[in-house]
Image (cartoon, rainbow, N blue to C red; front, side):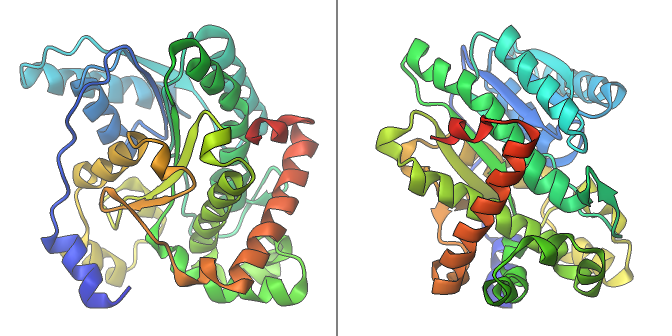
Length: 333
């Protein structure tokens, strides 16, 4: 994308304000005590979702977010009767992910929308669950959790005759990681390039973009293995654009601060993309949503290298998921 196009999208193009009704629906949003997730939760509550679950690491912060959303709705004279609940989820812990998914499957009668929004953009390399933190949280835990809530979403489709949606929040910055992952095609192995300390620190500025590119690989691969007509849940990914959010708190440079000041969208505007993607039907299965419509991501994803690395990544990821929870990857089929 050219810089003028980026500026146009950020400062001139207007995104549609979410409308419609989510009556009877249960919606789960991870990373929803602040930023994009909280604003998406506010929209769903305003639009009369039956239940919105804020999946957060800190129950105290989640409770504060719940109260803030409810106060804002009352101030706007909303008639919303949405039951907003706060559930604990630490994406840096596979045990927490498994416990959260078990609760979803045992306590909820339905899940209509699962918005996998939680993610980190760490300012330094550190290990979580044996991997680079951004890979653990943004990639492994995201797909582990997605796999483990899919049984409830499939059950929802059968029981209520609906088509639930699982949306993963990715980013337009995935384009910046093409050069890094191309080297994986030559090496024949992806994981060391995004996980090995020495390699990661050498290319640290593109580790967050790399994690977002891997998310898109995963969504595309799932849809290729389980096409829309054979799979009862829509799985897509969304680019919210460059927004004011807590995600960038570890990048306090003057240049980045100035860029945010001049070009960043508000979190509310960015959240419109999340709501749009999570509300799309089967035509968005396996697709990349940006500006509230289905778009093509980077050209690299359609290249021979891109397709080769997508297969390589999925094989390596599934191996890791099976180590954590044997049999879990069958839920993607």
